[in-house]
Every structure is written in C-alpha cells, then in structure tokens.
Length: 70
Image (spheres, rainbow, N blue to C red):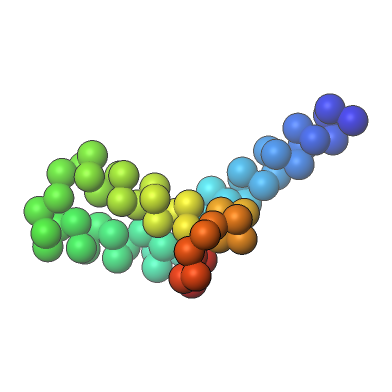
C-alpha cells in the first residue's frame, strides 16, 4: 500500500511540475507584473506561491472564499 501511495505522490508531483513548466501562462504573468512593480524575488515568490495555492483544487474546494480557484 505504501509503495502505491508513494507512486501516486510522485506521479502527481511530476504532472504538476511539467504542467507548470510547459504552460508559460502559469508563470509569465507573475514575472511581468513583478518586473513592472519592481518586486523583489522574495515577494514575487510569495505572491506566486499563494496564487498557486488558490489554483490547486484542494485549496479551492476547502476555502471559505467565494472566488477561490477561479
């Protein structure tokens, strides 16, 4: 059972990684906005991470916000 669960975690992480890497619409807007607003790398990383949480179905489904995951 543990090996199947580990395989599922690795597969999900791999799909998520390549989904983001191959979809510039997932990261390019953050780069452009960060440069335009002269954000530090730390601020850009935090904003991008928080938006990524909102994009993830688990967090969108379990959020109290009406607009989460949109």
